[in-house]
Image (cartoon, rainbow, N blue to C red; front, side, top):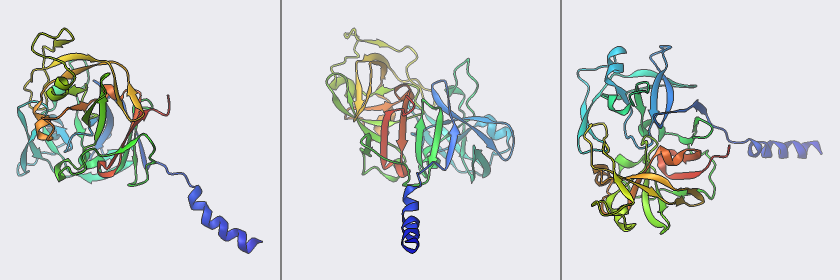
Length: 308
């Protein structure tokens, strides 16, 4: 029996091995932004980097670039279109060694002024990890457990709570962005949502508000003006209203009534979503949830955290 049994064991053993993340990073919420510790160039000082699934580039704040001597006067300069109408200037910095928990890599980033992203009573945000890095992995954002998991490509388990990217024909610039179909309100209005862990609050575009019968002309008692508007990296505020959305769902995932913003931000046009019901699904909607985005954002999975 032994010559038969041993080959069978050898064949079945790999199937019994459970998939596991390659790296598990502690993650905490700072100003309603998921944040991880990053060490640069071997220094022991932990820096606070927001992990933003809808940022196409990894950024370091100007003061960090100066302190760590990352500045490169010959670095390429580009502009980024954030939430508001004003763009922000980005300059590429020199390559350096980055340590994210057990993950070490040699990479480059771009520098810009991130001071507007911090609340007055919160520590400063030192940088942003964009999907130019995370899209190389299957990623699991477990907001309840407070961890960001990085899995090797095509190893993160799926399930009934997963869906293919709602914009399969998106261009290369949006390859790492996760788009899903979401049902809004009691009407269960179909809308396209970009999963944006770096957004503190969920934002509906004007087309979604109109389709839900919500008016922002001052005649609708269900909305109120947000005096500060909504601003991005450029710092220019865009007109914004607040509304208590009674329900939101995506597949088996459901969210109870929550306050959302309504703003026709220029970013919706940049994403090609200005004329159809769409939203930025922010971190406020992900509290207590588990979000999986596979390599290249081909599949997105949203469910209540398995730790609940």
